[in-house]
Length: 267
Length: 319
Image (tube, rainbow over all chains, first blue to last red; front, side):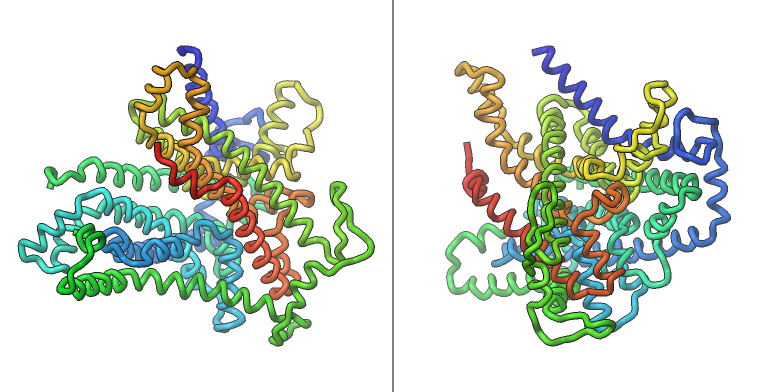
């Protein structure tokens, strides 16, 4: 009994090492004073990070990614809020089928979504590729995540609160803004952060749908081919990893805290 | 409120009320639904349409034809042998890559389930405090850049990578081991690492839902730990495990980033062919046919698999 318990804890420890080990090597080598990502480590340096400030094409790509990610996060969340409300509060005929349909981007390989959008944009609509086309592609992959996050949040509190509000004379609109939205707010923030991260880190769709301007992951990919760019790539990669991890933690903490205080007594 | 309108046979006076509610519900759904139709369903339809056209030089020939699909299965007397399997095809690349992608993806999926199941079990049955913290710890990597997680393996396995230089520094090897990177094995390891965090949650949820009194009852009735696991825990966690397997298998068959970065010439997959046909060979119609065929094959295999294991029955099983 005791031995088995320990074995699972050992496994969990090894698992975390496996999960994080390869990824954590990136910041280790980024801080290492060497041209290759090799052991033994040579010495501590910050020069790989300070060199980034002078890299204008990288900064431009970063700004593009930032713009797209903010736009995508806001748009996907704005679309997801009414959808999540409809799917949790109205028992709609065909609701389950519609939900499955909107969750499809989760299981379609992103390269297929990318080429499908490429076809309709270039061959059928005949518009040029730009950051807008990248954003369009990102909205479609973020939407299922935003809807899921919001649905789980909306399912977390009692719909009879809304009924009570309506019985007390509030209209649907007033009920939404004064009751539902404040209660769903942790989910909304979580959805915004998730949308932002997914879009900011997305590569395949951006790779296919971008025009002359690049996003940060596309820029990063273009640098991977050159061995001499490795230290810069490692530094940039480390920053992206740390930034994304912080945002994910924020999103999760906000969502979990929201659930914990979701009982009506806390209102 | 929703229960009343849906489950009771509504009297005529409430019919109009229910209809109004439905209309409101559909109105709320419509923005997200229209976006999904416009940016997912229509593009997929366009992709399907394109696969029936042909590319001649720089011109797109819009006469509907099955030529692209025929090209994928055009027979040839001279078989191309790949790993002992003869492909009697004039253009065997798509077929070979398809089989290869399915095999690699299946191996990655099996590895993911083997790695994720004990971890999910640990979370459900061993972690009693700070559960949310553990779950966040496990899910963080999944949300961080896929590109970077794959690239990390290049740093680990590369010719000048962490393993090679580490072993060299320790004096275990003299020359870097070249077999680590740029092969199907590296792709499978990297895929498994990238997706394992995603697979834990569904398995964990199905384990967490198991009524603990069932386990106690089994023990009281004399089941050993192993027998109890095999007869109760495993069958009851099957729906989550199957869902996790599909969530990993379906998208990885068409993965592009991993084979591109760590696969090398020997580790290419069907996604690389799609990219190549669209962006390099300028034969988008054939690329579309490959993509559509890939999706159809995946859908067919998944349906066959669910039917074979009797998924509907497993899911509806209540104990």
